[in-house]
Length: 386
View (cartoon, rainbow, N blue to C red):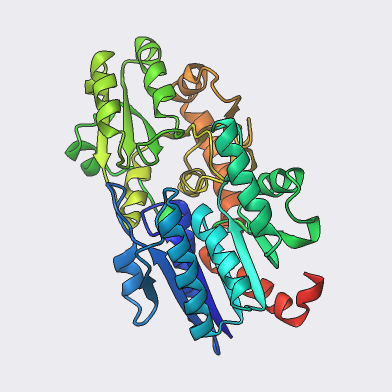
């Protein structure tokens, strides 16, 4: 079976890690040929291109496939994808992310590809953007949806959102959680040497956040709450793992608030090093306003760390209020939840352990690849009924 995956860019991020893990896993299946086509990765978020290039003849970079709207480049990317699909003659094209998802599916249909699958890693439309942009992206998704054999969603909430927007029918959707290598997180430990290296005292409670430093990720809410939290619990450190275009903005803001000594900006952290950082955290906060199902949440739970999240998209499927952490309405004051966990080590342990037991059953990367492969087999056997 010949399969081609398409993604807009291979920056360090959940959708990209999911895609690379999927193509790597599928290449281990007998009789499967896999290609990965991506636009170029630029910016401070880092790149997964080197990892993808470690497998010979896997990755192809398409320069015209860029993330911003660019009519001329978008047309060229659609034409180039159509031509490449005609050359490769894949039985199935599997697209990821907004731009590649739309152009890739339309090109696959134009090239006569029999099976077209698209993974919903996060919403392309919703209240997080203006009405004009929302209308444009929703229309694009409806158009691409009419050229889609099947959708994979990383959260049930995305299925509900797309169906409500008139995209697809229930039988066209399968929820497959975004798996990752569990063992490094299961083995994560509170390493005193690692804490000391970064100036974190043994008795300081560490509040971690793992996300790109960019809009809609919720850093401003955490920073805004910090003075009130520190006023009641001074022995606390905020660790922000990741980099991005808004790093300088957040560094200036913590300095303006006078809490810069309690904030640690790690910068870009390669995915294999994330478990080491999670190990020294006492809780993980994720306040994104737009994300299918943030991988930081199950990764934290795999390490036995409780989580705090806004009830956006699929966060509530992992952050179960009172069971694995605290689930809050978007924009709510997070200080009470942070302080409750900071004051109660037994509560942290209980919530973290409950989360660890569930994540072990659902988020193993090999299970994800197996579920995707089984879906391919079902579509191949009966594409008209998918």
